Image 1 (cartoon, rainbow over the protein chains, first blue to last red):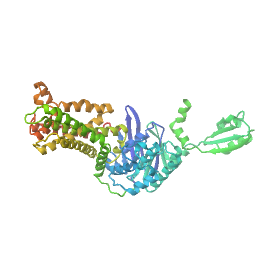
Image 2 (image 1 turned 180 degrees about the vertical axis):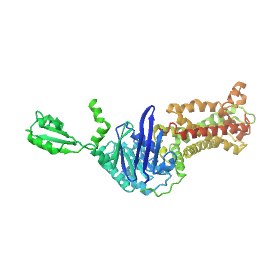
Image 3 (image 1 turned 45 degrees about the vertical axis):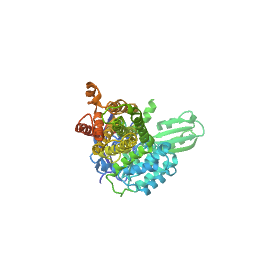
Image 4 (image 1 turned 180 degrees about the horizontal axis):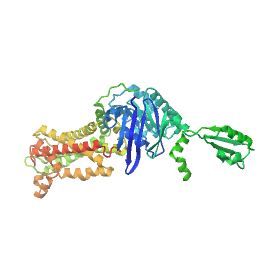
Length: 309
Length: 260
């Protein structure tokens, strides 16, 4: 089967600094794929190279089997991209600009589809406003509409929900899921990790231009076997009883809360027994699995940096 | 949801061309009316007032002499301004990415910008020519050559506008192309006086000014007299237009200062 997107050994430098170091990955048709990483990881640069805004130095990019250099016209017809930076043409209204964008892709205007996008993205009341009069969130929603106006087979969304309020964010993800269920492959980046966790079947994490992880979201989460157990106490604990010290406890809240981080080898039951055997007055307990945020911090070393700083 | 609408090959070009025309039409007071008023003022000053006391070419009034240069000045300035401003603004504001991600080919990109700029330049030229009828009647010695020269001049300076937009880093840079290169060359290229009346040194130097050949060729086509052979004027203009077109195409194709 032809991949929706196949990147092989992609390299890019800014000056002498490498920003994408031999990136290779492939996305299958119909996937919602997350590309995550801290600022400066190389995500947006990679997206620019895929969409044609950037020029790659080495490597190949294929979209549904079409080389994005030698077959760039066919390739760009089937890619819709929303870049991270808000850029709009201030000369036109939303409605006019969307018609223009459809034409740029060689696709005659489809009023039904245009109106559907306008409605779903909540742009209706602002249709005849000029771009300069739109808020940041509205401009971002317009950019999503622009990326979808020619019904692309591969949709690339770089930080689509930054600066967008919660309700519209939810609406946007609903639309993305719907479009995906109709056959469009989606590549997205976001700093809202809970969104990536709920939206993406597979996730790649980049750091300093390197690909540090690429797995199914569930497998990526299981990479962090740590479980966090929070114990609330009736009376503040003056010190940790000796039987609990090997569960790596952390005292919080003036001694009325202890957080234990259990490794893969440690069983929750052993902790409960040790707690029962101690003189601590347990009021409540909460066990949590690690989320994508913990995995992300672990893989990108962000936590370590913050600890050192 | 994948699209069943057919891909129309010429549509990206037509859309960009239309967008460029809409852009200058939306600010027509600035892009069309202002240059027409400026040229009309020149016509009034040199044609109706001072012109009656000046004679530089035997058999022709000063108004008749100066009109070809003023028409061409309008065409040159506006063709250059349209491509240079529009493309530079797109680069500066970042919305050039809207074009870079689409299936527009280099040829479509260049010709869409060029034709819109030519249209603006020729509209201004036509308006100035029309207004000039109030000041003098021209013999139109070789009308098809006159139209050809207008078309070549607008094409040439549209290409130069594209090149200037790509090399400019800021608005200062861009205005330098117009203020320190195009305007001096136009004024020294024989708009207001025939090169033949200059001392030999300055006359010789003026023959190195490429805009001289455009103005002289156009004047020859309208009045039937000129300082340089007509074939030389048209040949040099055509060669410059081709050279700048190749240069602009190479820049756009390479993505220089457009793609990261």
